Image (cartoon, rainbow, N blue to C red; front, side, top):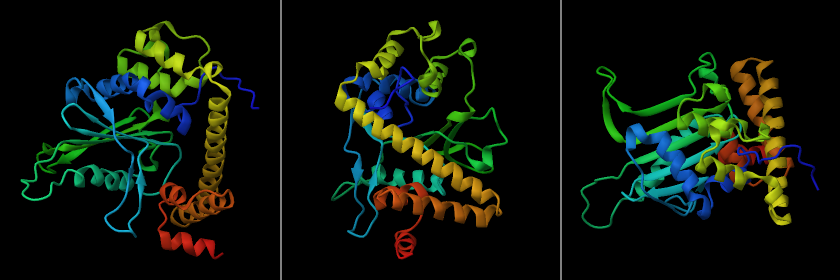
Length: 292
């Protein structure tokens, strides 16, 4: 049994993220987070319900996608919430691809005037985009379709929000908004031993309560251990691969890094879908790697 030195779970593990935001009894945590994240765009979201998070393509050969969290509010608006643990080639492409599923699901048989409900794709990143690393204070990106000349929003029903969590470095004393407090909790949960006074609110008290490892039963502890091991192995693999890539030049290095990661994942027995999602490789490229 693993000996935990931290008091609370790591929210960047699959188990930790879904423990906080993906369980029905904790739906109010996700609701509060979404309200703070999107209040300028949305107004108040009064309720949400979880939707099946596995989606198939139109044909048998299309790639299957599995969202971390997929939910709908009382107005029928859809929210994809993704946690990305490590750098991935073409991650922005991936989020655009994911957004097409809740769009296509709204197509009605028979006569339909093409009216769509808004779709929000939210990515909580445990890494920094390479092209944005020189902007240390810019950790939130809100993206909509806009007109290049006027810079006005042309279409407001498709929104992407990216949160580069490594750039969020505010101290407890610098937290001025409820949204700041959520980001601080996510960024620092494993480092916290005593709940800071600034976070002693009902909603955050519940988050800390649900995240406390000492409250887990043996089965939950084992699930978290497995998730934590996967997270650490993945981080080490990705860090090594990207480091090796940088030593041999940008384009060639990135290709080598991705190949190294994919091979390590294959050796670890990971499923093809996971490898494809994490690396951005095509099915054909992965099949070629398997052949050696």
